[in-house]
Length: 342
Ligand code: NAP
Ligand code: G4F
Image (cartoon, rainbow, N blue to C red; front, side, top):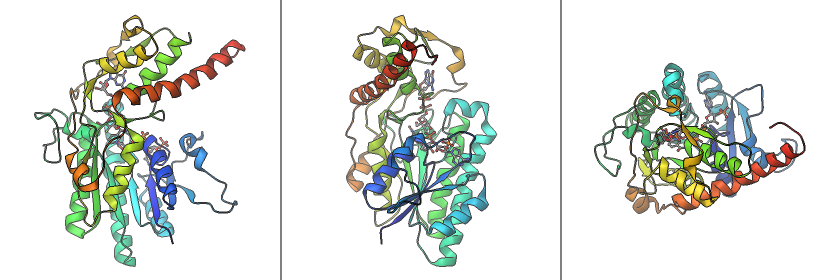
């Protein structure tokens, strides 16, 4: 029998890459999907087979991190060996507009899940390994560069405060209840599947549309912020590796390199022979009340203990995203030329 994994946040960027990775390793993958009036499964549609076909390995269940009963029911039905908690209101700027909701999903939602797993393990004797999607955003106002597993947290957003709550709950369930629970402290990771309101994807979408004459301008906020950007496809492998170890632990996952938003812009627009300064305008709406100015990770522990290392640097990541977004822009151009409004 292959292993069974349960993924919260399966419809998100990381959920889709992790699903691909686990299916490739023979797992039965179950994912929790929120009910919505529109389809939200675009990122995993290429993996999904109708349940009436044979050999179906990907199964979706309606549920929500805010609905503890649904989590308990799904865990009892699915009997997972590994649970990956990727679900979150993951947008930092939005967390200032919806702090309570963000805390409920990110902090209390994680607690609902940990409680459900603990009770399931205790009543069945079935060991469940747990991965928590912790974030470099927790370092916030950094005093040391680069950041590693010992760097103190100093959160600068409601999102980061909630992630720190979930981080420590994960540690506490490991220590108090002997749960195999790990935190992956992941630095920013991007891909062609990145949500379009995160800065890298906003830039690659805009640059390709500008190149094809579909728009003129893009509005951005703080161009001086620096991030350690890696490729999401690499980072989900680190999540899996953490759950395959002898003992549970917490790991930083990062490239070790940091670049400003301005440098990312230069790379993206330069690749298309465009001058970004002709197309970028400032909008204070995109500033945060408190900003994280610089993140740069030290992933030595993951490299030494998990044998993990990133395979894509910022330049190649940016070009991968531009190449994918150019295909989208070309399709939009074709529609516009045929008289459709996009
Ligand atoms: P994402 O693309 O925003 O995906 C978030 C996922 O969570 C989506 O599937 C979303 O469902 C789901 N979700 C949101 N609220 C939920 C709820 N109440 N109940 C159940 N599901 C819910 O995020 P990502 O970039 O893949 O990141 C995955 C995780 O890693 C997140 O926890 C994020 O905070 C964390 N993280 C991300 C990064 C990064 O750079 N990407 C770095 C560090 C940590 P819908 O599709 O229905 O919206
Ligand atoms: O792309 P961002 O929105 O990512 P941010 O805030 O670093 O958060 C992402 O990474 C975290 C890991 O550290 C995750 F935990 C979190 O879930 C998320 O995936 O913004 C990056 C930087 C910020 O400094 C922001 O102020 O870009 C700056 N920025 C400048 N103009 C902008 C914009 N960010 C966005 N989203 N939109 C802008 O127009």
